[in-house]
Image 1 (spheres, protein in one colour):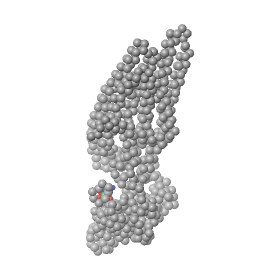
Image 2: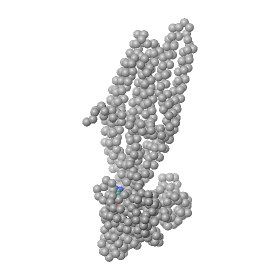
Image 3: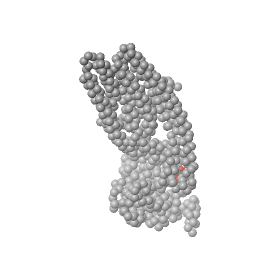
Image 4: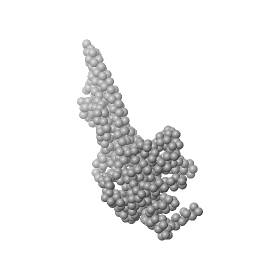
Length: 604
Ligand code: ADP
């Protein structure tokens, strides 16, 4: 075991670990405001001692004036004016502090949010699919506007109180060095205890984060638009709510223990420090009665002790709030510091464009998974060819597309385009060549036009291109019946937004894929599942007409469309089971043939 003192200190200092980083964050957000805040904090920290000192001069002045034959009233009056001025300066610096804090809060909130989002842009799909990491992202976003500044405020508050305490100590030193010792010793136990409990709370919080996450998830399911339908129809509500309650109960027991322990200790240590203060109080009074110090000095010392105690109490409150800020920042920094593999590859074109797309013994296993999602998959699609992937749910079709689009990197084998390994391609150049619609395509709460234009950011605002793409994607007819046409706001989140049917959304997504007119690989992951048969036929006619120049990869369960593909691959459990065209696969009389007959029977 390590040295207990050292470990205690580390735990104690844990409260301040993120203060430095929060300060750095504030400093780099706006140096002038930070400097102003620091200067004002210093002033607001020192001046209370100055006021106490002037107070002493005033009382002594009054006592001397009363004893003198010709009283020096003017001198005392000037001191009062001086004290009033200092009080004004204190008030001004408090205001200044609050102004700088407000401005910093706005700047810092924006800055942290931008940092979070910028980082999100560099992340890979795998990060978003990792529950713990995704949770960090959500938590980081949740309180981005308030937490960093709150920690800074508390740290500055602590510094301000610290400065006040030092200045009180300087003045008290003249009375007796022992008084300084009392001032420090009276505050320290509470201080350490508060820091320790804050740290405990911090660890408790982190440790049980999966429970908290489940609670948040339950809240979302019960109270959000997309969960409501099923929750109502299946009567899940009470059950989910009970689970929510149970988690709370479990967490509350721990919370209660810690809170009670914390406050009991806080109370007794508080009594101890009050006792020390009052002992010092008594000591000052007795010394005055015995003529050891002047009445003015006594007044000052009493003020110093009382304010010293208040400063200690304020510091403790600051510390006890710091654990929550720490919690936030530790999460934020873990998120921001997540390592992202550098994107390799610079090539903008391959050496042999006629080779098209090749999978060579490609295997893939999801991070943390026990089994391969794909094993030894090999096939080729030449320019102008169309490929259809057939297989049960979970057989690995979408995974294959994720590899092709470089959302994931194969764990074995190699994928190449135009004779060049995908990893050597510049990722942007590669993605420019691919138009893809996933099953769970985006339904952006933007205008219709932007929803389509999103397919190619270069032309996101180009009405003519929207129209062409919408024509090809079969979305134009219904868009034109909408009152605002391409300017119609979609979705329900914003006022006046219009919700579309599943099939209409799918046509929008198709049109989006067609925005990439120069993309020569078109990937459609069950694009027509929600679409009517006439639209489906029309869209596939269009594909066929494109096929002279382009590669099409289609995932579908409808054999009526699959059969038209130049090559059909049947996937089962991540492996290629059969491969060929419709005729050859029928002749082979394997899985494809039997599935085909099964479906054909349904139509007879
Ligand atoms: P399909 O598209 O053929 O329905 P997928 O390619 O989506 O199937 O899934 C193939 C396999 O990989 C399934 O067993 C699925 O459980 C698993 N899988 C899919 N996505 C992930 C993921 N993000 N993390 C871990 N496993 C996954």
